[in-house]
Length: 233
Ligand code: DC
Image (cartoon, rainbow, N blue to C red; front, side, top):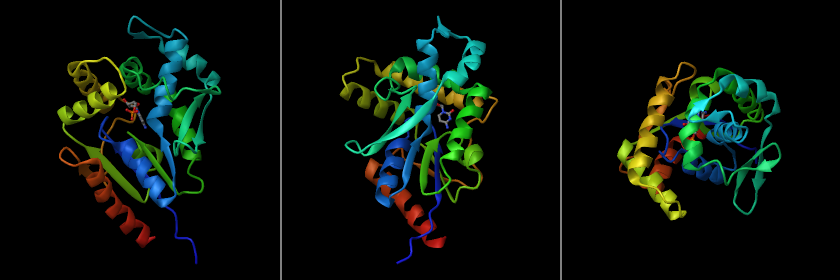
């Protein structure tokens, strides 16, 4: 039997729309590689915080840009977890990059063109054999404008904040719903208004609003488009 042709699946959208959960599930089901590009921007933000480039809420852009060559990111597949974890200079930082502190700083870091250039180049190299599901904000517009399938995820800010709040409190994080909502809306604003590669739906992307869908319903909806596209190539 011949192997079906592999495609690139680009999943973009607002924060906390379940992009990663969906992308991970799709990749597992169809045997593709999953790449979480948000984790890459988060790891750079975490590095900037550790190096003291962010003090009193102010980011020293030049210091971070000068230090970019010292930032080495790679993903390593964890068979027990079933997905790849991100390593920053050989340290597994998966456990640190989803904190509210990193979440509050990451959009600022992601607005720096030099940071984007470095990460986009690395992301484009990951697609050599296709068979990839990548999620982020600019995958269908900048990283893979020719991706065969582009999905754009949306949901109301309140629904997204509730999901993120539940996820964090389930993980023992002491946080208020209001501060999670504030983080969600301020990131929406920064991500959609930045000058370089703002979050925008690609003209040929399929929009999925999952405000009133469960995780399983979102997956089933996306899988319809995946099966259709894979059947066409
Ligand atoms: O998907 P996430 O919430 O983990 O992403 C973290 C931040 O990184 C998000 O606020 C915007 C930024 N980001 C980006 O600018 N481009 C990407 N391709 C992925 C994430």
